Image (cartoon, rainbow, N blue to C red; front, side, top):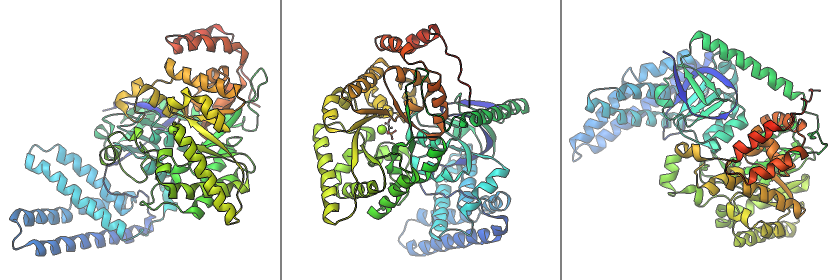
Length: 593
Ligand code: PEP
Ligand code: MG
């Protein structure tokens, strides 16, 4: 029977595929396909790992016998039994043989299937054995991972995924996990938790795959292998759709592709409004390997390189100066003389360094990570790490135009400390006679305190960039990653629009460049309003760029300026804007070249 699940639309488009449920496992599970001829070797790898875990349990049993409580020995027996039971052992082999999953993925998939069966058991004793099963499976996965990379190769990801499209369903995926999916295994994803501007959602947008977050019970309702439709425009997930619905969505998928192809033809056209004003369109990237897509989409530079993604999935080992320099240099050279804005590390809150669920992060690290040690606070608390990053950025600036952007800065003392750190790094490089370039230094305006005392920032910084995702979070006291308050996360809130507007106007009046690099910049709903408020520089995911450019090409900015002023003083800015827009004459659509 077809079921619908509702969540928050975070990345546009339609994905249709078979569900892969990723258990919120505490261990790292690699997901990739093996080549059919590698099946035998993968099965042997699984058997070797299982034999090894068996030996460990047997040895443990011998060790604890004697004075240990009888329950402990009995528990080890249960673990041994589960490990060898056909339900785990046999079925896991099937995932490898029939689906070509790698061994770790096969164990995780079977664990997910069995966990559900355990949850449905009447008998409490048996139901509680689920924890034992999880421990056994996780030990097996860890042993497999310790044994090194399997014979499978990640290069085969795309090929196998093409036969049967797959979509990912999970309770929660960290941004670090999302980065692993850049290889393209999954066509879309659904999570139970998360908000519209959570970093997981942002990474999904950067992957340009349809996604729905905050779908609450999705990972409980959807089962392994169910066919599902993800409607990333409506925030809807349809489980087990009827043939008629499926056909309708396949049609929408084709239409979406046609529209993307049409917009792609605007690539080389400058973004100039109908009244002749030139607008700068920049790209947000996570890794230097995203830079070619930025150029391809027609970006005139990188407005936000979220450098923290270089620091993730590294088991706690941070990239050293040369490794960071190579990454920044790669982005700078790929952009061929266009400016690259590198934001210093913004780690913390919903962006842990390594795989960790949000709830683990909240409980293990601090009660309220969004207000804790994050971004520039983190950098200033670890001067050694910060100097390494600053040196790498300054060295990359010798290769092309680089701008340095400081996240979440709000306190005058932080401004002083940041400039001192930059000067120290520059002086070191000079002493060592290493080449370093001039950089413009900018502040992200994403804490209300910074917006409220903008003149101070404008005296120190060369430019400012509005981080609207965090500015909304901190102005409205709404955790951007928490789906239970997502309905209150409102970019149209008068307080938010007031801060955005005063920042743009004050920066322009002071002759400083101002950009918006939060999700508002790539949201077509706000393009005209931001233009009318005076914004002339937008930074967004490359995939959003053509649509925004089309909007700009159709906008007569002066015709909207008076309306923007009225909206700022309205109790309900969105309604005032929509009503006013309906009254202004729609300019004729601009034909695509
Ligand atoms: C923002 O807060 O708007 C922003 C661009 O930074 P991030 O989303 O990485 O926090
Ligand atoms: Mg931010």
